[in-house]
Image (cartoon, rainbow, N blue to C red):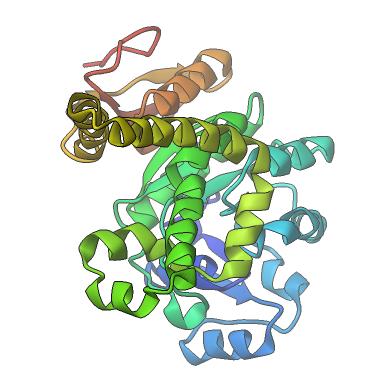
Length: 348
């Protein structure tokens, strides 16, 4: 992929664990000029072993780059963003892969970085950790949230959208930072709590060994993310505490309904509640979409920003973005089952 000046994109990845390492390997495989940096010396050595430059100092890794991906632990991202911003030019796009967005977006805004910082969150991962677990194809077909900002920040969002689609083969989901945090609380964070609760209750049970001996697909699927490194899980949960607690309340309320139906021997209620759950599970795949190709003037961003936020909130995504003269054109998909509302209609 070429940069905005027509040369090959120069990228850097700061923090090369599972997600950062997968970003690094994919950028390298795609032929971009990429450097990686990690505070751990052994990890830097591993990056060099697989053929990726990994300077000793962070400032060396990010110097003269077009884009820098911040992929360290969630509690470190604010400090790292400030350090990388100071070490890079004003035209360098900055983004992160953290699992919460509102707090870091506010930090960037307070420091005047909104024009070049695009909060991001690729919805992919495994229960393994470290660069040795990284895979360049980890993001193929995955949803990758990017949070567009009004004004000059839209230019950085457009450029980064094109890079994520073209290089990572991901689906870009545009979303406001606070909406992202509310959505992932239920989509990702509460499942970590539930998986930990089921696995933890099993570990405490006097029947532990017998349960594990009989554990089949339902137990394995339900506890998979309990295998995530505990420190990483704790960082994620604490970083989105208020939204997670709100979402957990709705989950426990539903669980109370199930328990009450079971306690009362109410077959109809038990069946109805599980039918609701089954419908949601089946909706994970095969939902029909309609293609949209809206165009917006580069100079006027309010309508464009409204379209992007509404698209993500409605379950849609972007799979293309290009600028043509003084306009930007998006290639997008929206669920046909969602009301059209003010979303731009298909063009052409």
